[in-house]
Amino acid sequence: MANEPNDQETLLEFPCDFPIKVMGESHEEFANLILAVVQQHLPDFDATAIEMRASSGGKYISLTCTVGVDSKQQLDDIYRSLTSHPKVKYVL
Image (cartoon, rainbow, N blue to C red):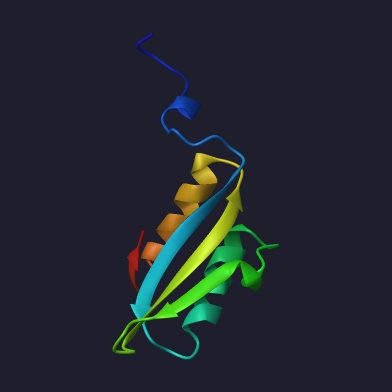
């Protein structure tokens, strides 16, 4: 079957919980900024679903946000919003 439906373009099964790692320079408001971006797409996203780690030198911070998404489109939209944020260096 050469033409599979669009929902087959990912190996993920939706709905699912998906961890997104967001990295940027340490800033006292970084976690709140990222929380606000995620909540634009998932208004009920809870800040307790964020794990925070500082780099060994303290210059950078990484946040792992485990998001509950219903579709690939929703996950892609969150990634696009995070990667376009000026305080974000990397999103994995």
